[in-house]
Length: 424
Ligand code: UDX
Image 1 (cartoon, rainbow, N blue to C red):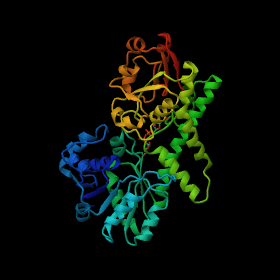
Image 2 (image 1 turned 90 degrees about the horizontal axis):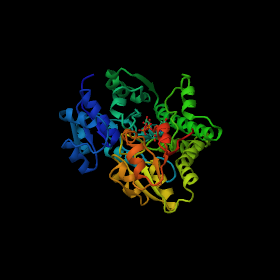
Image 3 (image 1 turned 30 degrees about the vertical axis):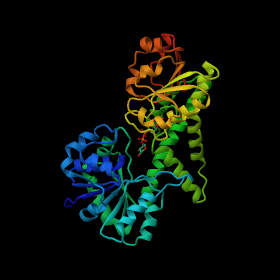
Image 4 (image 1 turned 180 degrees about the vertical axis):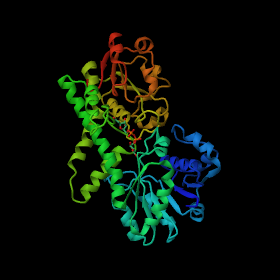
């Protein structure tokens, strides 16, 4: 295939990773966003999100990467438009497709372009767009990128899903060819199945997490250690070791939204997806369980000083969407506790969402005078703190609730800490 420039519509996290990685594979990429400040800073080579390896990739491929606010630039120069706009949940739990619709509007009645849908959309979206916009090319190409490892996930995917219906098979061949250098298995399918693969994959992973979290909760009652249980389960290769880490619940921009979207989608079609209802509820309860653990040791919480270590929904990202820290800060404020939160990158960003919690400039500042430390996000630097020295000295009560089973329990207990993990 001759090298034609590629269009990327929406330069959020997925769009920027997609644009930078295709540039790295040698393609000229025109990436468009409606926010002028974002486009300006990207044009200067500044990457506005925290994603390891991405700034380097953007810098290295600066000559092939063009950022613009003008959709006309893309329509003029490119044929394949990778749609990477966000599709957040609405109050009803359905996905908000207004940004996808806006792109469709900008396309007008051009039949020279194909939409390659990377955004997560409800099953049936591609079909409905094709029905309404007779002749428009449409390829479903869902993303499976994890924040923090997105560049590696793009370059070495477990699989690439390319979905198309008869009239768009040629565009799908083009898309498939773009990924050929990655050497990954390509799952070529119809549009609806591709859409479902994305939602079902995330819903399944979320189910795995809620499942192990419930095993953890039962293990606490029955005296088992969930880490040992997960290890023993994970060696069965029908189960696999991944996504069996019990913790304070899943967050992020994908799992909560996609589980909700699939549940809603099923409901709209007349099917009650019972399992996913439980997955969501278990996760909500899991996010709040820490409060009970604090009360067990501290009694009523009014006036208690609680340090939250970690605000981001997971390490190596500054993303706080659906983060457990937000729920905990809110509940703790509701209980009358004073909360000080620290995160290596996400603290300030989340200030307004942390229910009046104050933001500390360092972990040590956060733990100063604390009645308890709650570890919410397993940032590597938290393991390296001088727990038995400086941290213990600064705390009023040496109580640690380790929401990720991340710290060295034996060392902490030997130093006189009261330690509460998850499922042990
Ligand atoms: C996820 C999917 O993995 C990715 O394929 C999809 O495209 C987008 O959503 P991401 O949201 O970046 O990626 O994070 P991920 O690393 O999958 O973790 C999601 C949440 O689950 C985090 O809050 C994490 O702490 C939690 N988690 C993960 C657990 O609690 N236990 C685990 O064993 C794994």
